[in-house]
Image (cartoon, one colour):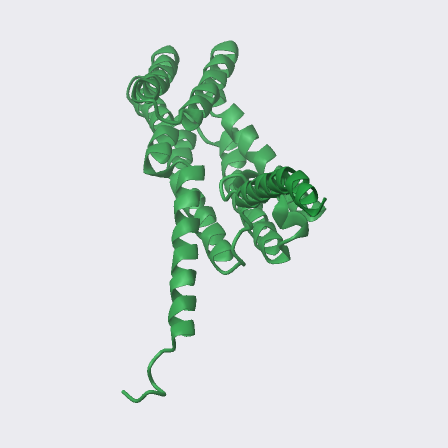
Amino acid sequence: MTSLDKPTTEETSADTSADDARAVTEAALFEAFGGVRGMVETVLPGLLFVSIYTVNKNLHMSALAALGVALVMVVVRLARRDTVKHAFSGVFGVGFGVVFAMMTGNAKDFYLPGMLYTLGLAVAYIVTAMAGVPLIGLMLGPVFKENLSWRTRNPGRKKAYTKASWAWGLILLAKCAILFPLYWWADTTQLGWVLVALKIPPFLLAVYLTWVFLAKAPPPIDVFAEMEAEERAEEERKAAAAEEGEGAPAGRHRRS
């Protein structure tokens, strides 16, 4: 290999920085969306409900079993002092489903709150993207320690967040386009198994597209580091001013 063929230091550094940015983006997305454990906590209650209902058609047993496993997952999270937001969201979703199904006596209504939430979330992603305040940016800004700096100071990040919000919105709308007709026309077990099957693949597709968009975007502006740097600079200025104030009388005394 000639010297012309060898990668320069700048190229190597750029490649390393790009790899680091991708790794940070991947880790942040994994944290924000709960990772493998979060997916399990999302799928398990619904899977348990439809499995039990498929076997014995007992609404009460199926609903209480789903709620029970959701509560157990929260307790495990609390015992391990882990982040509980994903488990708690699962409990609330299952709880609303249980209430709806018990009130109406229709087992399919166990799934209705979650379906309505998915539809509302899809609309929120699309509306916020159109308004220039993409929901994904609002969600991930604190994770990347950039808060809302991407809105005015980092247009490349804003563009990536907008694309990601559109992707999430359209994917969730497509999911709703499959589920809502089944809610009206299919029976409970058919709806339940299709819903379980559609829990993970659309989610993974949306997360992957978000990763692709953000990996190609400029790095986030760490506003927390900027604030810390400003605080240190202010402390240094105050210390320097104090030293000058202490030295000034002695200087005047020597001149006199």
